[in-house]
Length: 376
Image (cartoon, rainbow, N blue to C red; front, side):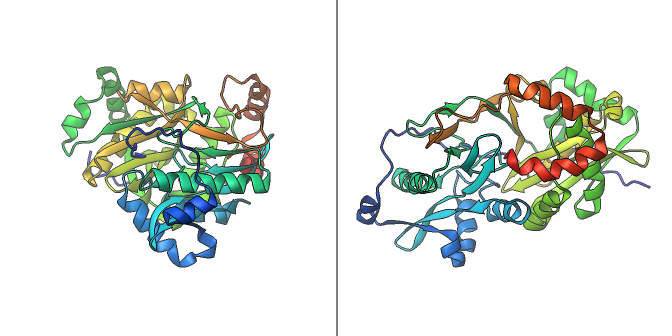
């Protein structure tokens, strides 16, 4: 007997800020009293890192140490996470990882697999100090580029217009949340009830079911699947702030989503549904019940996650009444001559995607986890 769910990410945008000032050099840092240190050299500051992220408007669930710890336990990425100290207090953080990408080679990314990353700082001088540290490190390592997955652009670094995020206020009244959804989408939400769908929330107890549905879903999209260990690591590192909602039809899980909870925000980040469940509107049922569950848990912001513009997921989120906000990812080009192009419009990906879709599902479940780290 499957119990029914009771009760029906935002990455908080920082105030708009652009500065054309150059990153601070080492002697300037000493003058300003800002000291940038690597977290691996000061592991005693790990707790202070999370306290700072949790207390500042620019902090996101991805800036929390849990994300980087999960990365380091599952992928061959080297941590170069750093903090800015002023008079001994944490004034900013920059989660940063050295990765090998395909086909471009080595890069420093803040943050791999995250919708948001980049600098989280108290003010412009601290922000510049952390960017300056990353720039010096990048040139010392001779990487192709440094990627900042920002919420707001800074300085004169080139911006990639590819990803958008979708955020909306939540209310404690389910009827008010339902009224905020366009009429056509409300009809889709009700389809699940007519087909007897049920939703449950859990954690490790739903991991196997979640992974089976997720692997099926990304195979249909033509992209490699993560190893199950990645999701197990997220559950372990985030604790109760990471949960799985699964949708059942009779005794079969037909859709599932993994969500991160951070302050008053809910961010459904990994999800999927069986193709056979589309006729039951399982995806719509799933996100509606997640929205209601999040509101009942006290969340007041629902972040539908990032999507590449002009894609199916992009349009799906707009149908829910969410308006897209650009995520201005920026690049410090070190040895690369141009920003990487991972747009679905890039014809270079057409053939690999088509081939991947045609591979048997068991093959993709074996091969995907072995190559996914090359596409962070």
